[in-house]
Image 1: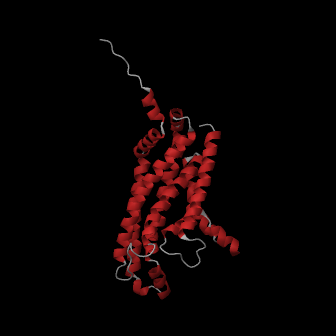
Image 2 (image 1 turned 60 degrees about the vertical axis):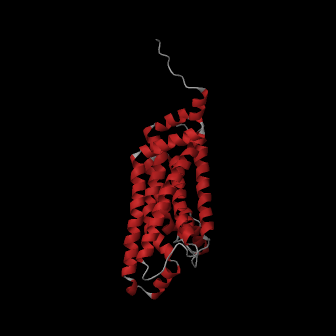
Image 3 (image 1 turned 180 degrees about the horizontal axis):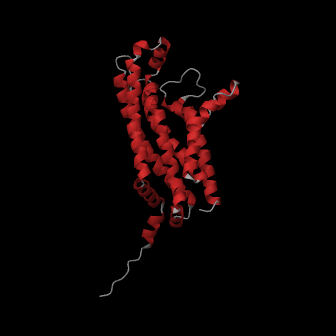
Length: 276
């Protein structure tokens, strides 16, 4: 009896080369990397934990809080609840988004990825789809858990429920914002191609640039700050438009989307032009 080597059929090769095959490949890579579990675990842990901590402090010190601050909290308790752990959890998503692609450049695995699928834009698109869907899923769970925790802790001071105007949109919008942030970070990682430099760049955008731009004088500084990617995008986590906001929540999210699309377009252009 002679053994015959199994040869892949044309259908099998086409399946592996299809976009669905790329999605499965990127999902396998994403879940097999330790940084994915750490980053998503930190998001799932930090968001509800800091919500409980900060909302608990707000409730405990309610009687000592100035009347103007109490009125501000009462006007949009959803934003207070979601914002309590929101800013703390952002760096985890920034790190994950950059590492999804920058780590492949640092290890040289990007060459194998491009050999398996020479069409580079399809590879970048598959990474973006898988990353954003995973982050969206975990973020939505974390946001809903945080909201229910915060609403329960504030119940004696302020009533907050998903039935309040804009509340459900704000909770879902928080997940959408973090998913968009992962794509924003992915794009910067693809442009920079170095893990440390990419993470530093994203953190600068998210945590450092906004306070600096806010120091610019006059209307220029006001508009420049409002149209920064994360400052505009974070408005989607508010149930109502606050006094002084230049953009509505959906307009702000749209601005963040435009920033992200522009960076992804730059990343795609450079990916096609540069050697792996």
